[in-house]
Image (cartoon, rainbow, N blue to C red; front, side, top):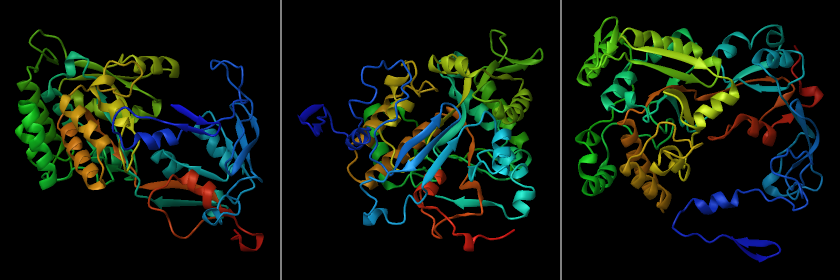
Length: 446
């Protein structure tokens, strides 16, 4: 970083990376006076100077924070900001649990809630306030990338180092049952690490993907197996004519090939050790899906224990990769880049605190990520990410979960929004930027 003048700094880069310059430009700029002389270890409660549309007006640590429109905002009269940031004040409230939050909505403390729990959406977002029209329950479709989420196997553990074992565990989850019995059919299965985008690999590789695969084959030889040129398998399904029984039979055969056989009441290896591991849960909300998955594994003779640790211990265990399996995730992006090094790169495998929770260390993956961050054209980026998706999926590192193609929102009838939805958006940010309060004469009376 080079200081050019009092108002300018320049970033010089050692290597070509099309995204890094944008990452640098996202770094927030703070006044030297904010927090001056205070240690980073201390919580700084000084209100920061800001040049955005809102400034901090008031807060109660851990309870709420209120923003007020900035009268000196540079974009107040700018054409690109017309009709935006219409609320004079915006307050974010913090609640310890979902039940208390819902009661706050019903009591009028909250004007808008996004609901991530399918169970809460189906059972809690209903009642007198909705029936009378005071609250509106609505799905907002979007085209956001779903990223990935799933039961993630820690390859640092010997039990998961055989790909046949990982594929057997991949086959054992019954998404259709979960969606029907637990999620009110509100989810879609996530087939890819880049689901709900054009970046997801489908079917046979196209000619551009084949070209990249041939180049990789010349460099890495046997590390790329013939199956990489075949049709990419979708996640297993139990929709007829498929069934859980058939999927578990395939799992059993794979486990047998890997040296695991059922005897003395458990699936055991050649040394007689039982196939047993623990799933570390980030929250007790995941116990429902963990229990369903554990039942399926039990039919194979596998014992999967699951446990939700307290936040501090869970964080420490995750940072030090001290788990057998956990629930991993990565946010969706229409343009993946440098974050891929942290999630899948060999250099992050043994770096405490990294997001490489599966422990992936594959030179083919490293090469693809390096090419992705250097891609100069969108077409090249899409091709490379699709090839990366194929390589990762054929490693069977995760048992993929599911995603929603809608934002689930309850909001007060006094709020209005534009009639045209954006393609890619977060509902809270979109509401803050473009929604407005209806005039009294336009409110729909209950």
